[in-house]
Length: 125
Image (tube, rainbow, N blue to C red; front, side):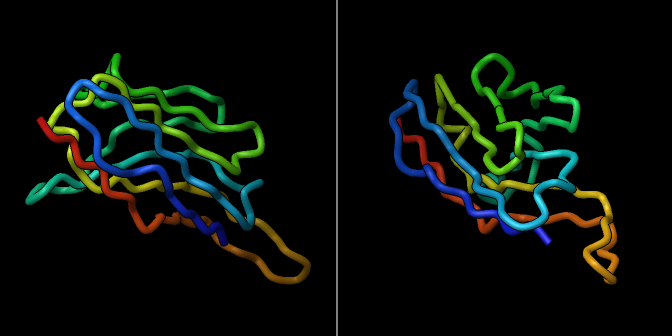
């Protein structure tokens, strides 16, 4: 019901900055929470930052004070500004949304979650 496409990953030197963007399309009106996850090499996927339907944000302790999550009012774009990057931030970053069920004409679409394809961020010394 919602399609997500991330962009903005790449190579950056430690201490540098990088911005990620996630474009959402489809039933964006039904989106509640929008979240960035990451998966570091040989690690489980972990939450990085999230913003809920009220605009409240939360960050993982490891990125607090360095990363900033934001979204537009239409919930069509989610961004992650990453500053003071370090090698441990190297990961594939994923955009994720949760949405509430809705009717479209005569068909009901239940609550859903969607993932983007991921974008690689590599921080080098």
